[in-house]
Amino acid sequence: MSRIGRLPIDIPSGVDIKVDGSAVTVKGPKGELSLTVASPIEVKVEESQILVSRPDDERESRSLHGLTRTLIANNIVGVTEGYSKGLEIVGTGYRVQQKGSSLEFALGFSHPVTVEPPAGITFSVEGNTKVTVQGIDKQQVGETAANIRKLRKPEPYKGKGVRYAGEVVRRKAGKSGK
Image (tube, rainbow, N blue to C red; front, side, top):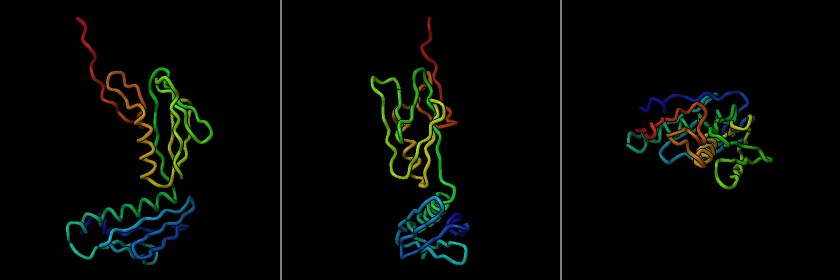
């Protein structure tokens, strides 16, 4: 039995869960998220808990069991607390400004780079080198932060670029002079 999959998920107060066949909808104070459960996995709501079960021990069923439980738990955390991912901009002349809901980056290119937030995502800028990506969908928050980081990845010689908050960039030794 999956160690993660067999654990029940507690439903906090203020969260409403509907299971309709393979569709699971989670409604909370911050919004609503839905998830389609893969075919062999079954989801049941009992009192104030959600139970995820699998019918057999086939390889596919086992792999989906813990995944489904974790995705539902992530949706519950998302609609109650939300998710956020911090980014730092390091480098001389590298900065970010908030223009309405979008961000405008100066990353050493000949032009500013503008990033529009996808639906359900908000940006907040602290100073001109720190950005926070916030939303209720964990996957979407992480993907948006990764796309921003991809604009200018931290390079290994000086460490300049966009990095996650707290990320340690491995530095390389430069040229050795004679």
